[in-house]
Length: 79
Image (tube, rainbow, N blue to C red):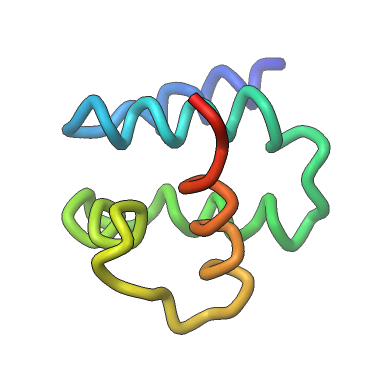
């Protein structure tokens, strides 16, 4: 639980859109995700907001296929 609280804090970004998308994934999917997807999520959280926004808004595709699949999953989660 303590680690989830730290991750929740790291999901807070510069824009409401990023905050909502990242937090939604964390709360609904992260715990059940396989280790590769969890690692990809941690990698996403290290990105600059501008790069992360381009991925999550569909303006740019990640080169890494695991990261690309995670971005697609985050983008298609229902509100």
